[in-house]
Length: 305
Ligand SMILES: [Zn+2]
Picture (tube, helix red, strand yellow):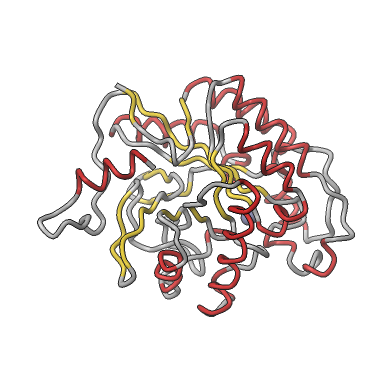
């Protein structure tokens, strides 16, 4: 993380540590935003935790290659790299896939082990989950795994202790804090750009998913269902706004969002709409988005001059 080291030096105060909440300073005109992927199967999404419990995962059809291969092709076509937050459970079954992603020049980071929301774990269970995932990913790709993203962005005000556990377990950055205020979701009052968090356990770089401020209200606009279901113009407006500030925005997607042929699981109609809506058009939408903006992985992040 050469750019992180530079940012740390640039932001160091008299005591040698970064300032809390300080946004990493822009240094030039053309921004490379962060492209991130949460690598999991179509049945891992938290909305399916009842219809597809962990005990059933082994017997379910694997579809992850469909989306991962599309993403690798799209990234190569646009001369972009990305950070892939890989679920540990999946990595252990598909070490070949993890190595293929890494050998294409992309960063491997951690999405935890078993896709349990942090809000449903205590510190001990969380530590076991992230340690198992990071150790497995490092063994598979033979490189340090620095970053973490919580399933369903589930680090909220009240379970901030997870940030200390991440530092204690060797992570240098997190990408889980959505700076919006919603009941049971979001990190109220969090910064919308890359910034430092100073915790009891040390410092952690936070790379929040992109948001857009509209009429004084901050809305998620960084990817996933928001990218599939809302007008593309909202995501474009959000990333243009980051660009105008000279700082990177963070985009995210899942492999299953590029797989129209995935099996449909039995969930209520509103969950079906939110989860499957827009999938057939997502690839075309993504192509248009990638034509306008430039992307790189978090570990490779820098601002071009
Ligand atoms: Zn996930």
